Image (cartoon, rainbow, N blue to C red; front, side, top):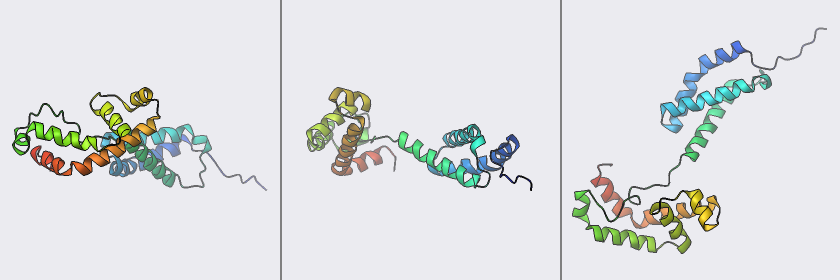
Length: 184
């Protein structure tokens, strides 16, 4: 009776065929997550490189297509997480120097600065300190964590809390600034 061992591993020809058949579909799938063709292609290429590096371990009895789509989805989600910005148009403004005439028509620069300062005063002390170090001193989360002797995750949590509170208290101001900047 002949040895009926199942073939495991991915041959070069199988890999090339898989790449030709699936790369475009995977890129289109990735674009739905990352909204950028170049990033989508990069993610898909990294998935295929990883597959090639582990080709000897591939079980041909399992769905490689399902694996590829799952791997691309996970890498897309990681990309989104790693590139998430805690930024807001309102909170990035330099309150002392407004170049947008329309904003000054709605609020004087001093009144606008006062509104932002009043919102900042609502933040818990440590939260406000972290926010000010990030926004006004331009420090990175890692630098803030080192200076305050807290974890980077704690810095992220403080920033997230600050942004939530400030957005809630400055929402009327945000809408006006967005309209003035023709963003809406």
